[in-house]
Length: 446
Ligand code: PXG
Image (cartoon, rainbow, N blue to C red; front, side, top):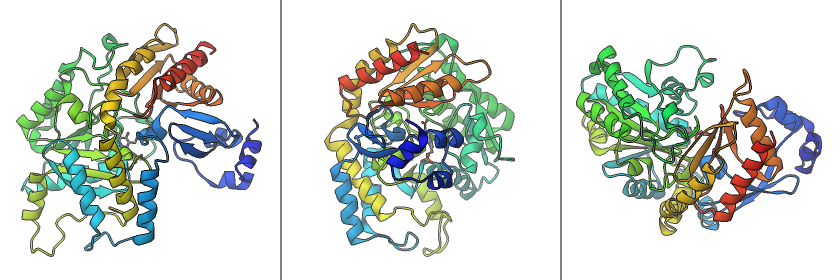
């Protein structure tokens, strides 16, 4: 259907279409051919042209419990009628404390203090600031360097792109923070691994090399995603995260896990930390925290980190950590968060994901054989296909695949040279079949 026609169906004028500068979108192409979503229910979107589209990415990895859960809608609407906004600084409202407590109880042991923000990007900035400030408060101000990883994605703010390892997200923005990067863990010998790849734990020793170069006395923290999401589901080799943890411990470097995608059941466990059996000092979450219904991020820290700020905070009325957002712990986000966590536990969503994961793995790997697919990777209900590059344009084929899938009634995500799948944790086997069949057909027709 022609672009203007679809826009008109959604009640949009061409001028309205022009006004919105869309994030991470090819705006020129989109506005010629808008793909508009007007409603959602369960695992399906409804498009402006009246089609039911199967959601293969849980929105953007955020709606694990499926869309428009009435429990969340009701909690948010009740809260809106009671308290629309409470000042976030120096005053509080009860749901913020309840949500912090509930989240800490769900999180890996030891991550007991929770700082709220409004997105994954903000939760990352919070984590990086906590790390640097912590060492200053410990009397070690020179411990300030941050270490991320090539292909890592930690949101789009300056700290996040400094530790992030996706070139196009960094190149336009000038001087970044003082950061270095570990190599990514994508090895040719691991191609088409099912789940956790066997080779490459020794890549964690690259952290020792960084320590030799910079000296641990200058390094504040290492930040990694337990599995890299945006770069196309890069699962760490067996033993890799354990080794990172050991090296961090040995050199007194904080380990930060960015669980914005890997959190809340995506791996088949509550958090990536549980899936891999490694506990960080600081953990970043967002997305699934509210099931995507209201923006929210959170940064969880070990009690000792929190206590360090309290001890160094001066008189009791003084601000111990000069950081926070107008909308930190917004009442509507807290209401959504509490309802989403309630659903997550009551419906055993992590267990459901773990039960469906082998079926998903089998289906995804059945696509092996097409010469266009150069790797298939998966963990839990996250999966990616690596697509052979069009000469000089690695993103072109994935883009084309995703757009044809949309026309065929499924929504999948493309990023770089990959196609990504993150179906909801309440997906049915038939829905997995439909995602994979459609993808296979579309790739076959290229
Ligand atoms: N950390 C990680 C690991 C993420 O995946 C962020 C931080 C930033 O979150 P916000 O809420 O600021 O966007 C993310 C976000 C994709 C995709 O398809 C991934 C994200 C966002 C949009 C698309 O890979 N991740």
